[in-house]
Structures are given as structure tokens and as C-alpha cells.
Image 1: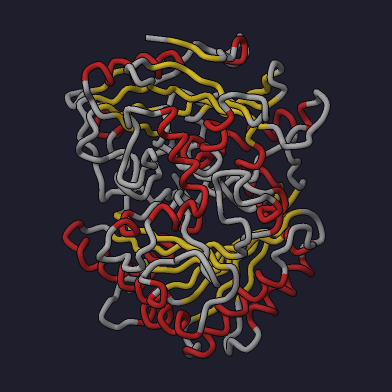
Image 2: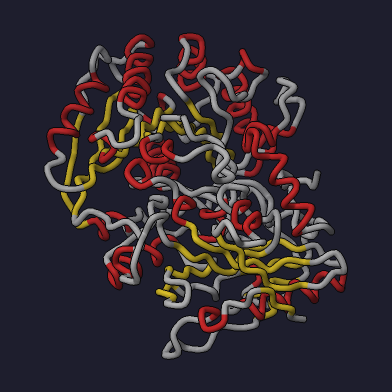
Length: 534
């Protein structure tokens, strides 16, 4: 489920601060079921148990707060191997979880009740499928490999996330957004079809392919994977992508074409010299800019930015991002001037023009997986209230909590994302202009309670007017399932009376329940925030 470069930048900044301070097939995909014939045979199947030296790595691929203890990890290399692994686990009564990139922030895969983990590391193919006239992406491929292969092969891309190590499986099923989304929409806005291993009422595992075509009897299963989240309906093994309205059989015209280059930037505003008024002004300037330029088609949609508001011990706040295409200097300068107005401190700006692919594949060498993490999320349709900004400032400057690795990231949203109706995909938030990402990161297990308390109190106080959670309506618009937070289902932290699934899915949840009842009637695929059949 997700995972973004902002997390890594936040943690890297914090570290520096600390240092200084059986197979049945329905609609089988025929020749599209495998990459071109000159590719090597698929990996696996591999069965890894606790005594295997590979086991320790395979069960430690996510948030360090959670380490799984399954009886086995099945590393698979083909859809047929997934079907066989699911069938065996169902017959043995073993609970199943699925892993692609391993960036889930909660224990959905590492739950101690999970006995079989299906690891999609061997399913990484990315290729053009002439039978569907679409690009096939296997669910274990990382975003970096998706970008590299699509661009070098056909000059196209998907508007996905900025962390190249994230697996496509979780990223896509939760909606998927990134630096090009204000120009081209969410990843799922380009999803044409999905291949899923499901389990029937009689316990039989089989493969189903569902498309967005109105005539497809399986279309509801496609729809559920356009933001319904991973681990709910089956094991996704393959996606096919083709933009709506794309015509002809030229692969280079079936998906968005990225810019030849981007202007990347980092802007820093020091905490030193910034009072509470200046802090609030910086945050408000950012949200005001997003509201002003949040409509589809605005020229400013070329600019993507993440404003990371750090705890005071980290030293400063940062804006990171990019301007797509040539002549981005003026747009960036205007943006920095708008954000800095009235803040009271002088920003330090660094910028570099680089080829688009180089920017998309950049990483800072830290994918965050050695950290213990707690994250939370939200959307904004407008700006924070004065009371909310006071709560943010308080928790970022509290002197009874010294950890520098705590932050709130404000990310530009809207644009082309909001050109799609809320019910057209399972992603309901289609009129928001800012996405929020709350983070606490630490290393020592003995400090879990202290850090969890800080971020929970932070979030609760920001949303104190709506029961401690971002209830849709007014300025707030719920939360993001790719940044899952089990506290939303805990009445100790959600006192709003609004159920967790409304925060994630809004009015789309009843339809997701119907999909669950049809395609996973035995509730084989489940976790602490999974869709429940209606």
C-alpha cells in the first residue's frame, strides 16, 4: 500500500537532526497471460519456511513495528502458481495475506494470524499486450521498473507515486497518485483491466479477468480495484492500462507521455526566526495556492509540491517537488513567492533540470523499512481553520516530545484528478485539492508507546471539531486507504460516530460490500480494515 519519497526525506532529515542533536479459469487472458516468449521462464514456485535462511528477509519487508510469523512464504512467478498457492492454503484452512512491494504501514500482511504469505516478487513483467491493445503490468513490479520499461520502450508512463521501490499491486488498488496526477489523473483512471485470483463459495480458487467495458459481466470487480484497496477481494496478479479515449493500435498513444525534462526543487524555510504567525501563514499560503489552482486544466497543474512541516528539532520545513516540462522557472518562482509571503523568514531554494526518467527513478537509498512507523492521512477541500493550524503548530513545537522525525506533509492534489466523478471509480475523493500525510518514525521498540501517543494526539487535536477524524464534509474529505490507519476503526480515537469505511470510501462503500459478497463470499481475503460483505 503505499509509500512515498516524502516519508524517506522526512526520516532522512530526522536522522541528520538526531546526529547533530487447482485451476479454473474464467475469461483466460490467452497469449496475454505471459510476457513475450523470449523472456525467461517464471520464477518459482518457491516455498520458504521458518528454517530457511531466506525467511527472515521475506517476513521483514515493511514497517518494522510488525514482523510476520507465517508458516510459509510462497514466492510466486506466475498466475498459475498463485492459484495453486491460494488453493492449497484454503484447503488447509490457513489464513492468507499477499505482498507485492511490502510498504504497508499497518500489519495487514504481518498479522500473527496469517499463516501463508503469497509474495509476488517473481511477477515483475511489464509489456505491451496486442490482444488487449493495452500495457500489462504484473502486480509484483515496482513503480520504478514500470516507469523505466514503459518510457524506454514506448515513451509513455503512468501518473504514479514518487517512490520507485513501491510495488504496483498495492499502489494501484488503493488509487495511486503522484507528481503527474494533477496533469493526468490517478493511476486507476487509466486502468483498463485487472486479473484476480478469487475463491468461490465452494472453496475453489480460479482466475477472473475484469475490464472497464460496460458490457463486461465482471466489471464490478474491475471497479473495486480502482481505489478499494488491496487484500479485499482476491490476489491481483496483473493489470492492463490504456487511457480512456485512447484510439488506434499505436502503443505510444495509449498512455500519457511524460515531459522530456522536469525542474526539480527543494525549498527550505528555517524554524529559526519563524513565530507561530509565520508558521500558520506558510501552511495557509500553500493551501490557498492549491485552492486557487486546483481546477483541471490550470497551467499550474504542471507543478507538484510536497510541503513537509517538520518538528522544530529537525531545523526547518521543506518543499520538494517538480515542474513538468520546459520553462518551469517562472512558475516555481511565483510559487515560492506566494508561499513565502508574510512568513517572516527567507527561503533557501535549490533547483535542477533533469531528464524526466532520471527524476522518476531517483531514490535517496532509504526506503524507510528499517524504521518503526505510524502514519495517518487526510484530504482538504480548502484551508485549515485557525484552530487546526494552532493544533499543528503546538504538536510540532511541543517541548515534552523531542523526536525530530515527526511531520505533517501537505501535498498538491486536484487538477485532472477532480475531472472524474466520485462514483466512476472506487476512489471517492474527487474534489479535494490537498492530500495530508502525518508521520512519526523511530527505531527503538521500547519507545513505541511514546511515539504512538504523540501522533495519535496530534491527529485527534487537528480534527477535534469532528470527533478526532477527518469526517467528509466542509473542509475535510476523509482519508486515503493507501496510508491505512487502524485507529480510525477504534472508538477510543474515532469519537465521531462516523464509521471508518465512510472516511475512506464515502458513498462508495455499499457497492464495495456487494463486490465483496460476490467475489469473496468466504471472506478469505481480510485484514483489520478490509471491506465487509453487505
